[in-house]
Image (cartoon, rainbow, N blue to C red; front, side, top):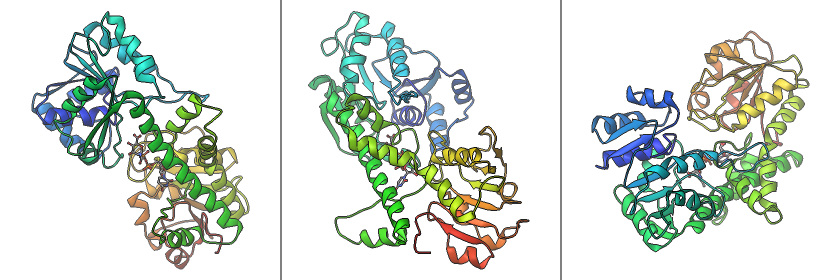
Length: 418
Ligand code: SAJ
């Protein structure tokens, strides 16, 4: 398993606890060291117990270099560059590190989300530097990961899995391998279809969230409460509008649609627009708050939550972080608190170690992530020094009534009625 991140580590551990001998490889020596000591560098429910069981069983060993194997799975990040183009360098270097070990009859599977045709046009030629021919001497397939952070261990086993082979036998070899633990249906297809399927899934979700965010802006304009309107629209049997909020983040949904835009810039117009709507939500949150508070410059703001979504420790591409930066740039005195990661740094922003520290002298409390800890806050328990504190809820996480009863002014993003 090349790459021991959010996908590689759970997958390697699950194979290991199902009797497969796995060498987990990561090029980051700190990750390899900590795993050897039984420490897990990621937060995901149940992951620590699973990794420790896998290591204890003797089936999972970790290393910083690959070794000969019957199957190689590549699960490394595919971020985007500043120009929003896919950065495939980790896939390329993982593939190159396999080449010296490649033997006839081996199976190589790419799991990393990649632009269409990557398996055929990028991966196969690198692997063929071994002197072997893809499809003829070794099996090659693309199988997208589809697990939801927060539910990875369950979805890894239960979700349907798509395996796209360079040819039929490659897809069948992939299916045989994943059958060791996947209980969902395993469907085979060609590699490029499987790549496209993955990109379409995340793009579909991004476009639907963009619709919700655009509805939110319209509702504010028409003095409608978007949260009430969505709940009512969703009573229609064929309508399921998603939740608006401060934007779309994470390493997947805010990145993957750009791979389609990059591959077909003339055609992917709706996809690009959706990305732009979601990416401009942090700016919208700033303007909304400025409007409610009267001013932002010099105001003490407590930002609650920096993760990209509730109850995860992942801050990659987080709209909460973007929003905090917008407030900082507008001259606010920001103190941010992220319970899942108190060591993260944002230049010019105070990172509080506790909720109390973040809010003690706040004039605005800005709820950016609906972490369980924040949603269950009772405003009556808060001890604040500032008078007339404004609570701004960007995720529909708090009750207006309780905050007003506790003496706060209250504003909810998208509530144009109140
Ligand atoms: N979000 C909203 N409104 C919503 C739902 C989500 O604003 O109604 C935001 C979240 O706050 C977050 C972002 O969207 O910032 C993405 O969160 P998410 O929970 O929708 O998805 P991810 O990125 O955690 O995981 C997605 C999943 N893809 C789909 O649901 C189609 C997951 O199945 C994929 O495996 C994962 O991307 C991936 O790795 O590609």
